[in-house]
Image (cartoon, rainbow, N blue to C red; front, side):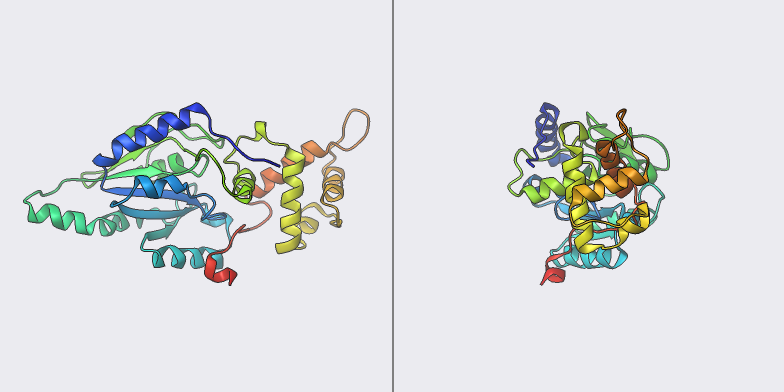
Length: 284
């Protein structure tokens, strides 16, 4: 299964980020807590050289808590500020303003020495599609000022949002990168919904997810769908279709519908808290 999705508006968005980076003091990068490494756009590091950095493990409530803590440690060791948040329910949001000020302490100190006082911190919010940037901004601002949606590609242009006299945010569209060197990365991005489902083969994707869950979280599917998982992931998918009464007109099982049910259940946390990758030191 080959993964690639880089529509034209992403090229435009990347160019826009390049143009605006000189206005920015801090880059706030949202990653998905279930795949913190695979959901990082490698272009951001290049764009954000010499800028203060804050990484937010968003959707932390959908990932294993012990893994979240390991990832926070991993990013802090790499020199980033890092916080886990759940933008949808507001978890961790209250601490963000003080974390922003702390991450930009050196810049504020430099400003003070040059006689520049009370200039707000300007932060660019970046991340791949569907990682929850707009939901995060709305939670932080306490009002709906950014468009949100559970499909990738909702935010198309840039918008400045003044949080208070201390912080201004620049919201940017979600961008992927032109070529996935590792198709494993593409697979994980497809699992969480950062690549449009319309260009994917749902049954093949669901089969890959079934393989992973059987290996790392055995019993999860049996418990959720009241089935006995088979060796063959496609057979397991058929059993999920049977359990969920997904039938075709000819009384066969609609495995494509079952595949979408499985993917939605995973993405919405209905299979429990699942992390798809562990930090380097946890893998050693």
